[in-house]
Amino acid sequence: MPRMDGIAATRRLLDGGRCPARILVLTTFDEDQYIYRALRAGASGSLLKSAPPCELAGAIRAVAAGEALLAPEITRRKIEE
Image (cartoon, rainbow, N blue to C red):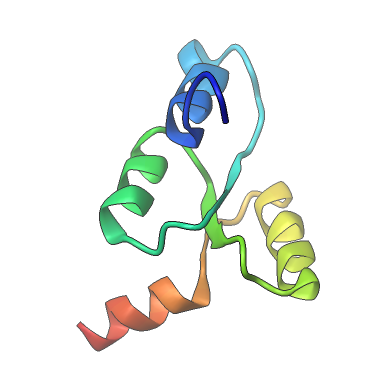
């Protein structure tokens, strides 16, 4: 994204509650700190860009329904920790 990253865009879209959007962050960064920053900015979930189409479609449906979602890789790592 040329002008800002996804976290800044999420924060800006949700600033002050003016926009009722639910945001699913798609990222190439499989790093906990990036995911935590996205969630603190207001994202409802995070998925890696390498996710297969069926996983992406399911994630969009889950977030649209008001659920929270983390990429399976992230969830697995957190459980192992």
